[in-house]
Image (cartoon, rainbow, N blue to C red; front, side, top):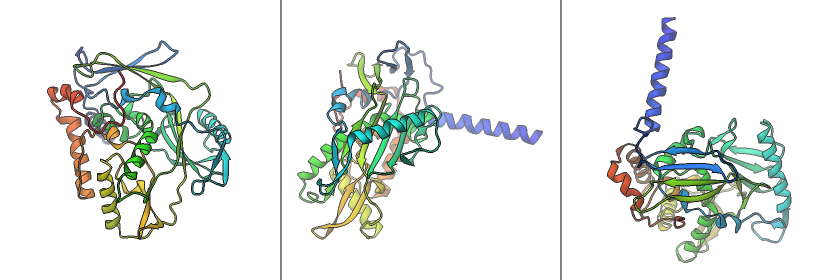
Length: 360
């Protein structure tokens, strides 16, 4: 009995210490009327969910505008193959039907999905049906990144794995749901940059991507207050459920090269792109197709990296070790070492890596 009591006390201590580590604001005084705050609700619902946190900032949440979403919707007509754009693969209408069926299966907590295979679920909460779920279509060469949030889960950053906790504190309240909305515009801007770079032009590709939303989709309205000395209430609208449909890239026959050479190339490319792309090596596929005797590179993940980790200025890194050390130091500083003055001045700091201007 004594041993069991000691075990319970030990577990409680571990949980308490862990919460204090990953939730720096948890024990701060919440009655500060100047504390940054935000409210979330459905557009057609009066129920409001709120959060107060010293790390909330205007960017990136309030940079998104509804029109950015609708200009890149999945077409309903025939989608052709990625390489030649000549062979019909499937209609967008058929993919739309399969994704809607997937949503129904998830809502009914079916363990076996009819038309999809799960590739990644670490940031998805199946019981609350929120977060990011990555899947592949079983019968078509496409990958689906499904994003679901509700007003009561949008700022519940510790309910969807460990990554969202650190993104929240590093990037002014950012989460995967907001990060997903940057993927198509960032792809577009990245390819535009590459087209003007002689070293990379013709050598870099990215899979096609389209937004998808269910019929009668609900949108959330988010209001932010006290996030900057020179700003009043901020407002934006975010889709509750959406997905990104992207070409599936074959990774079975990559170009063979030493890992050190591969990571050096990735770091150089990421530096040249001002870190708009996450430099993690799994985001880059080196194909056997050669351009000037060098392998063509396909960028898999085009999430705007500065938005998700709160990088505001250009940096250059000579190695992966230097890059990882910078991110670790930034994370620790953002979580625990910010003074009140740093917090108040952070939203006013010049941000040269914004994907979009802040909505006002």
